[in-house]
Image (cartoon, rainbow, N blue to C red):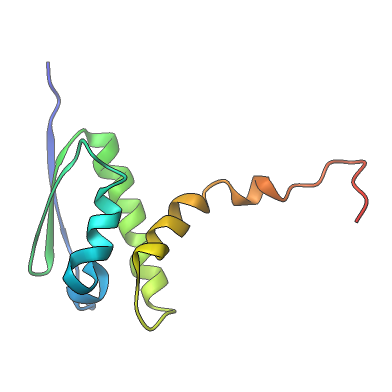
Length: 101
């Protein structure tokens, strides 16, 4: 009836603190977008429990954060917001046939 899945994500080749943020602020910001998902961070492992679709989406966003960290000195909760807000940004700037620039 209730399809609860579990998944463990291992953070390799990157210090987990660089992803979790100071005081876990970045991880908390990410988790705020997934209120139905149980997230436990232990060392270099992130343990997820919840619906499969949410686990999959969390993994995608976490990978986006890891990729962003490779290009930045450090991550902040604003980077998490940007990842979620950025989903629709390509459409925001789409031009129609009659657009004048």
